[in-house]
Image (tube, rainbow, N blue to C red; front, side):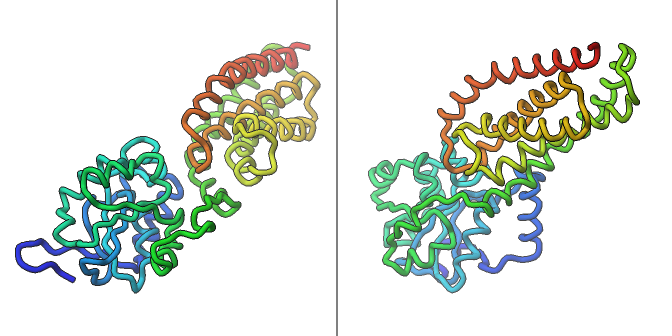
Amino acid sequence: MNPPGDIAPVPELSTVLRLSDWLGTLRVRLGLRRSSYSIQPGLYRTGKPGPGSPVLVTANYKFTVDSLRRELAGLDTWILVADTKGVNVWCSAGKGTFSAKEVIRRMGKTDIARHVTARELILPQLSAPGVNANQIQRVTGWKTRFGPVRARDIPAFLENGRTASTAMRRVRFNLADRLVLIPRELIAGIPFALATFGLSILAAWIAARFGMRGNPLSKGLAMGTILVGAWLSGVALVPAFLPFIPSSWFTVKGALAGGVYGIIASMAFGATPWLIAASVVSSATISGKFAFDFTGSTTFTSLSGVERELRTMLPFGIASLAAAVAFAILGVVS
């Protein structure tokens, strides 16, 4: 429904994604130019909403908007898109860009009150850490309620009298949710893999000058393979088997996975005891580091917990790298 008189019409968001939208989704899943994947903040609509139609609030990360609008086929809704600097709902709430202040500002800029008389906002549940709903109601007079965790539950939520069931409130992070995040980490880590191979071959040539036996190229390739495998352990194995690896700290999960991998890989290459020790320690450290990076992709970590883990484990990581170098040297000269 287009507003009468001097009120500007509200642009419509299609509930059908085009090929370019799916390609954009693929691009951000691979971690390519994610920071520029956003839409203009403002007021949008799906279908032909009236003054009493529901108002859904979301972030201006385009992947988030696409995930929302494709679930609204056949529904007449208003969509208030906040300026979260192109960051998704959960992360922007944690960073403070998805806030009550921004929602209030966006309501004023879009003059939403001239389109809607129902005076109620439906906020995404994962915005709760950053949005003070009471502040919005106190300043604007609009009621607020939090919708379900996942966009696909919104039609049922609206049909159920705008009430979320227990299942809709539950945050899940199942195998499919975790696997879909791995490609981004793999793409981001390619420079590390290439640099590791190059430095491993260089180190093997230097070690050959100090008496290391065998072909330095094959030794370097073996070393590079072990270290790249440790990286893969942190970015792929840990997310895939996250619930089954002991500890709530990601660095410890990564270290355990990397340590086991290091034992198997170094023995498969026929390494000496000192070099096995070097491989295990370095693999555990590398895997732990990249597993820790995955904390930003989950919905059950907290900023304070991540900071505490970093402060505690960083000295261990530095000491482990020093120990790995010492073991490697002993393996070469012994």
